[in-house]
Amino acid sequence: MIRIAAVGDIHMGPESKGRLRPSFETLPDSADVLLLAGDLTRHGTPEEARVVAREIEGLAVPVVAVLGNHDHHADCPDEVAAVLRDAGARVLEGQATVVGNGGARIGVAGTKGFGGGFVGRCAGEFGEPIMKEFVRYSRRRADTLRDSLVELREQDCDVRIALTHFSPVPDTLAGEPPEIYPFLGSYLLAEAIDTAGADLAVHGHAHLGTEHGMTSGGVKVRNVAQPVIGRAFHVYHLARPERAATGASGVRAG
Image (tube, rainbow, N blue to C red; front, side, top):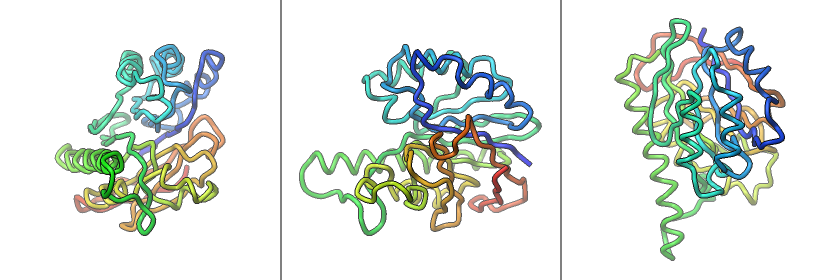
């Protein structure tokens, strides 16, 4: 089994130094990789990013991350990403990476994603230029996720994982006010995942949401926002069956 540890929405600041490090240091006993699903800081400042960096620096498992909306708030996401990369994390925005640990090759395609809503109740690319750009921005994020997952098909991965901050499905938003669903995710992300194929999709953002969901194409989705999972990280176990390039393998909570 391949063991995927994941958490999002840790929202760290100067006063939370060292809060997660003791738990993260146990990761080699339970996981092959740590995925960080965005909103790692409170206001997106380099100072806050350095707090996160100290939590993950030198860990004995690979760390792969995407940023969230909070990590963009101070308008310096590139600086935040650079601090995390200096600490050893692979920070993705429309890219793919393959990490190896314990003999497994784990492919991760990552993007922050964006909002827009879900089928039947979603924003349309119509009207004012600012509304068109809203939807186009969401579509661009989804397109890069699709392309990155397709790229991983050629990388001889044992599993492929879609890592986002915004949700690809409404299932994992259950518990949030329905009125804000369009600001928590987009069906375009799920379309990208189903088109390219993945073994698991992981996201954060919805603090009042639900852990378990699924795309219409059968890819299991997990909301790993820390307020939802209630722990430093949660571990998911993926099998390594033979499968078609666009198929999905089994996943169970570990």
